[in-house]
Image (cartoon, rainbow, N blue to C red):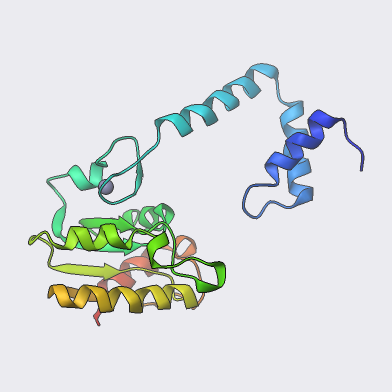
Length: 198
Ligand SMILES: [Zn+2]
């Protein structure tokens, strides 16, 4: 299909988003073009502001409006437990359950040799750095039960054990291979409750 260049470029941009194919990208582009000009401008400003006002927490690597983030700097949270997740979206899924009161560590990925992602490419070094703090008594691994999640969990367990810290994995009543973000709140809450030491 032949579009004017400006529309083709817009469709191309939308197609860069996860799970957006050519057809969806085209629908979004045309939707945008039908929107009133002031709404489009507001949308554009919102995108830029979100990018400018979002920081990565220097301690847990969560996305936040401040660094350290609200969770890391909260005195109401249990600083003896760190829950390890692969992405910020998993942290949000766990926070929604209102069941977990500890801290987090966002790895920003999982070990995946197939994709050329090794241990040094994710925030493992930084996690180990946090474990030298005597306050930390337990690390909960909340990584998806995928091949990469399993590999990362095993690797982390080996590294954390010598610190004399309890390591547990959340129980998965979750479907194998499923992403944490798609699980409902009750399933996640139960999974944290039923975690087992490894
Ligand atoms: Zn933080």
